Image (cartoon, rainbow, N blue to C red; front, top):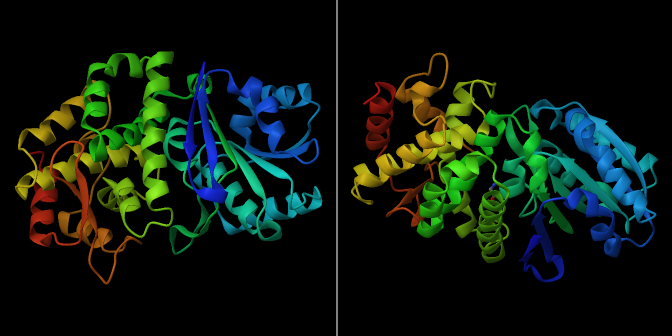
Length: 370
Ligand code: GLY
């Protein structure tokens, strides 16, 4: 059983297929895209050890020859040096304009390989085979590709939509609990930003999702992808609505920066804590019901997730420093920090009109555990 979400972007339209065992069907699913029976795959060592043999066997079963490059796992791989390595390898493999590059991995591989595909011969098609929950529900869909620069994360990149996304929920079994829950931070974000019924469904099915029950996971991933696809179709290049996908991210980026982008805080963990802070701020501003922040925090706790600043190990800087770090976010427009706030669960909106003293008050209280 699989579900299909169509991302209706005209000549850049594509399908996201979600289901179990898709890796074993990858040959048949990719074949219609190919002019010649040959693909190249880029992955990382951890993901390749777990899944590359299955993918190669599935391609082989359809007579598709596959050559693979494996990179070092981790965020540091999303850099200029590795981009050059991937592009030069693709050229050495004689990848042509009509060929297809497969990105097998989490967000780092998807972003890097997508960007390499975007710049290779002015753009070759690529297929995303996301293997983390975060990549399945967020980074593999929507065409944001890129690398980090010494000046900041994701500062160099391009919009380059994939030709197909294969989200095999079975591969999520190999994730650690921590990585799985970090990805869940992005799932809960979709309910919070635009679908109160989905948030309620997540509350009701928290145990099943956390237990990686197949049916529950399939629904959670499919609904998340449907929501992301809808937003991307409305605003592919983030001129407006797409910014809603950054709910929780303004706080998150400050916290990631304050913790040195280290294992103290994974991105999805920062998103969850950031969403809780965004709802707290919305409530203090009288925008959303007072019970919404506590309802959200109760759900995150029920999932066993980091919820509060005190859940982050080690020292966290002062509220003033965190606010300053928010001001360095790349989403700052004309010097004003852009926040995604909410009028209630499922009703997010974008605003640059938030009094800094209110942000300081929310952060100050969060730091003192109130
Ligand atoms: N991850 C946010 C976006 O794709 O716009």
